[in-house]
Amino acid sequence: MNAESWGDLELLDHIVRGRTLSAAARSLGVDQTTAARRLAALERRIGAALFDRIGGRLAPTPILARVLDRLRTISEEAALSMAALRRATAELKGHVRVTSVGFVLARILAPALGGLERSHPGITLDLVADDQPLSFERRETDIAVRLGRTAEDSTRIKRLGDIRFRLCRPAGLPSGEHPVVRYGAALAHLPEMLALDRARPNARAALTADKLEILIEAALALGAEVMLPELSARRDPRYEVVDEPAGVADRPVYLMIHPERARVPSVAAVATFIEAAVRDWR
Picture 1: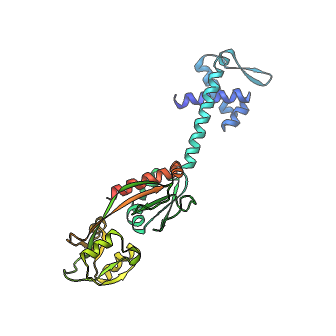
Picture 2: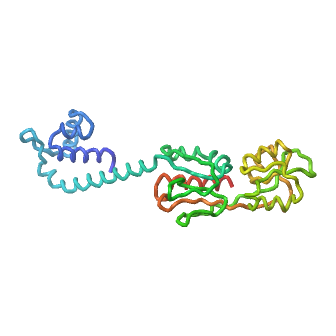
Picture 3: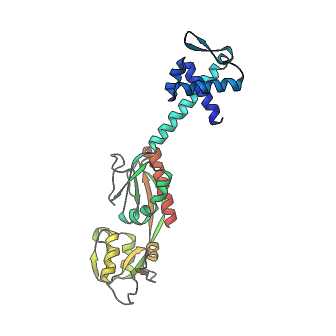
C-alpha cells in the first residue's frame, strides 16, 4: 500500500468516526477545505459517492458500508503499529550507563562513538571509569566491560575476545636495565603484572599506580618499561614493543549485562555497539 492509498483510508476512517468533515480535519491535523478536496478526489477516482449528507452529518453510502469492517480492521492495525513504533522509538532514547576501566572507555569505545551517534542519535551514553564491581540489580550500571569474569549471579556474560599485553618501552630508549612502572600490590595478581615479574624480576619499580592511563604517561617521563596493550603501543609512536617472550600476557574481555536490561532496545543497541567496537579495535 502506497502512502496515497493509506492516506485515503485514513481519511475515510476519520470521517466515519467524526461524521463531519470538520471533525475529521481536526483529528487529522488539516483544515476542512483540504479534507473536502481529498474526499472529492477520492470519490472521483472511485466513480461513486462514499457519503450521504443527512442533517449536516456524513453517513456512509451502501458502497462504503460494505467495506466498513475491513476499514476498521486496517485502521486498528495501523494504530497498533504506530503505537509500537512510538514505544520502540522512546525506548531507543534516554541514558545508558556503561562502566569499564578507563583504558577501554578512552581508547576503544570513545573513538568509535560516531557510529553509535549516527545509528541511534537519541541515546545518551554515560561512561563511568570504574573497575570495581557495580550492581546491576541496584541499577548502578546497565552494561559493564571487564577484563575479568566477576559479576552477580544473575548477570549475562559474553566473552568478546582477548587483549594482548606486551612489555614496552619509550621509543628510542636504549636496551639495558631500566626501571619499570606497574600496578601496586592489590593488582599484582593480574596476568600482565605476572608477565612483568617474569620478564624483569629484578627491575626497580619507579612508580606504582592503579590506572593504566597513569602508567602510560609515567613510563615516558621516567624512561621506564611498562606492560601495555600491544595494539595500543604499536599505534602510539611514543612507544616500541620489547622483543621479550616472557613479557606477554592475554586478558579476556567480557561484556556483562543484566538479562532484564538486555531486553531494553537502547541497552541492546549499546551492547551491540560495544561488541563491534572491541572487535574492530582488536
